[in-house]
Image (cartoon, rainbow, N blue to C red; front, side, top):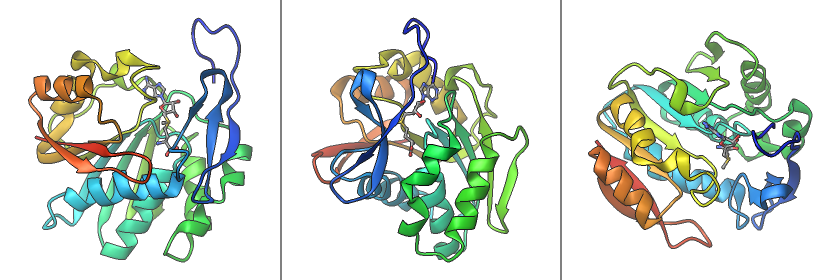
Length: 232
Ligand SMILES: C[S@@+](CC[C@H](N)C(=O)[O-])C[C@H]1O[C@@H](n2cnc3c(N)ncnc32)[C@H](O)[C@@H]1O
């Protein structure tokens, strides 16, 4: 990835986390893409169980927005969830710096899915990284990827049932967690929708609250006391 002001292209490296699953790691910032206590554990706990688990259960057709698509792990686990719960999902993943396919294939993420055909689904997810149109992953899941800063995109108003907010930590990129940026996500979220993030930082919660969100503190995955669920 090229970070303006950093003056060189940064290539993420592979890192094995404590649950045995792998993640990517940016050496220059000492920043992993997932918790070092467990990449799969964190994604399942925060985004699938706390996020999708808190979406209105009556809805069978969901619109999901992910800020920071990264490796595509949350998209793959959402695909798996859709198959287990017979939901149809249209998923928009925003990622300005998609990692190289060659390193993503070494993460072995399909082996953590319940559903058969996860290998095929992840291959289609990775090829959607480089398409401009929405890609059909299977009969229940569609993925569109936008390679841009999430703050520059114009989203349809009140459309998403769930937002996975998975940017790098606020200490590293505070501008992505400011109120005026989060307000864009509040406006894109449907009424009764939820935004979920791994961050439990007081300033992040205050910024979300300033946008109009109702804040819930939920227990975190291993190594993290709390995470944040924000409802509209
Ligand atoms: C914590 S990692 C995401 C992990 C990812 N959800 C996954 O499961 O692999 C943060 C991601 O945010 C992306 N990112 C950086 N700046 C961004 C921006 N302005 N808008 C959206 N995403 C951004 C990074 O490139 C990185 O992939």
